[in-house]
Amino acid sequence: MSRDRGPGRDAARSSGSTAGASQLKAVFVLLVGLSGGLVALQGDATLPVVGAAILGGLAAGGALLWYLVWITT
Image 1 (cartoon, rainbow, N blue to C red):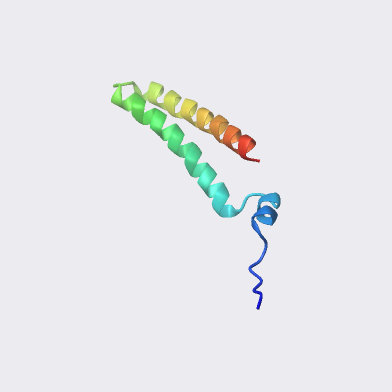
Image 2 (cartoon, rainbow, N blue to C red):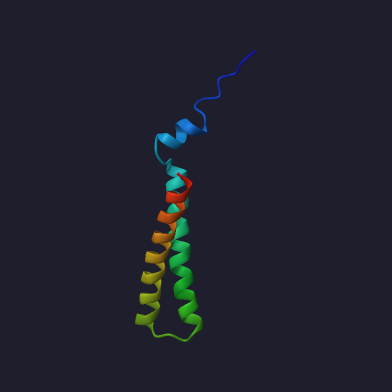
């Protein structure tokens, strides 16, 4: 007796990102960005420097995410 469980991993991967995967990617980038800001706060940085650290962290998180997606596909 065979059960149809829907499309396999390869079919889901080739059809693009799901909503959950997209949210996980966004959370990953935000986590990297906010961690940069928190490190700046611990170093007693001024508010503009904290903002720059967050923006730099977001850029680094986006680059890291792109690299991780690139090496896994």
